[in-house]
Image 1 (cartoon, helix red, strand yellow):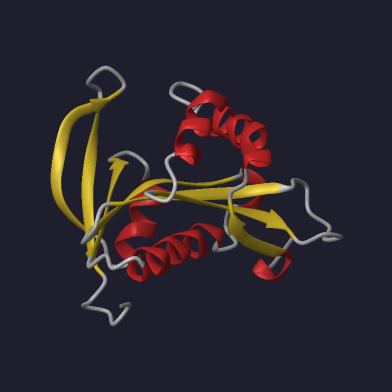
Image 2 (tube, rainbow, N blue to C red):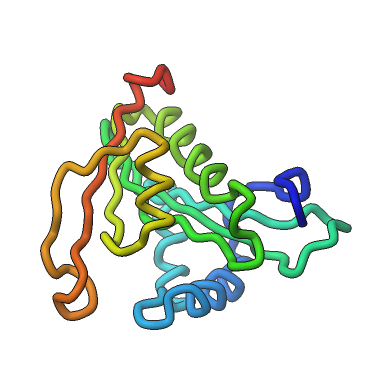
Length: 164
């Protein structure tokens, strides 16, 4: 796979739960969301809003579920709950595509800002967010790994970029 032309982003479905849980374990083995956690997240609609990225049928790709992302709509602020891309699909811009879709959905629901929390040592994610217009607003010292890794709280105004 060499382009995003072979990928479709769509609403997450109940039938995606086992795939979401399996990819979550592969990506975040120490604190993965279980299938039960995913069930709870999808049951939180319409406040919770999740998308998945799949290969277009017939595309020559190594995996069907290539990534996912999710939001919590909270009025003027929507929170990114998660953005993740399968290793086989990294480097294609899929993380940005998922983030763009989440921001579009947040703006469509009336959000003026999008916030997220990310591990301070997750350089690919922090770079993606910074290049997408997110700024660090606070740091939660020792939030991850029993106090070993900080969390960065980042925010983007959707109005400043005309996204609304």
